[in-house]
Image 1: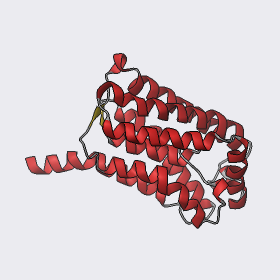
Image 2 (image 1 turned 90 degrees about the vertical axis):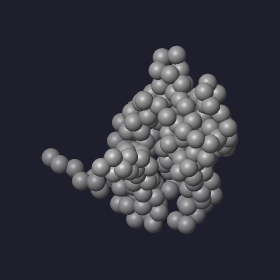
Image 3 (image 1 turned 120 degrees about the vertical axis):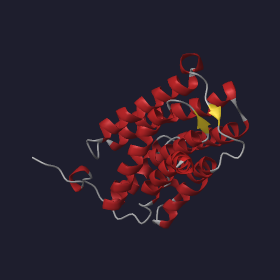
Image 4 (image 1 turned 45 degrees about the vertical axis):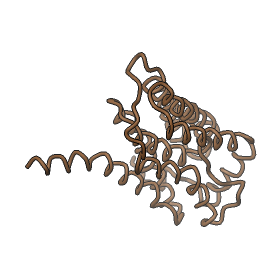
Length: 223
């Protein structure tokens, strides 16, 4: 027996949107708290270095664990069975971020890349401020919007932005689950005919491009 992508998404766009409406109301004020944590992570990451730079990653790690355990397992999984595995992946990502980037004595402290932070800062700003508003273009009410810290998409996207703002030998490991979720979410929104579905896969392309470009340009200069 084989499964198609449609078999893994046995609900309509309206049902999916309604899920977030019910979720946001059911866990209120978690969306506001998550957004506040995201803004704190933004300003901390822009201004900090060394030990203090761990703060935004600890905040984000807590958000991954919340989204995995509360949203994915307890709210999304009743609609689609892969939600259980998505939830486990989100919890794992939170634990990895807390250990790798939060508990510095084990694997070292993250270092800021530069003062401007470049694309990482723009991705983070987009995830915190603009991505939730894209839901309005799809006809979603304000209380059904997805925000950082309580919804998976902006949490994953903001994490990619944060990871681009640091140097760490295990950054590649911490990128796997957020990148995978961006592709899964993009495929889900595509099946549901949500017009904003390209945002998440485009984020993958941008992230990988920023990571690979210095290596490619460096090799071209050596040749």
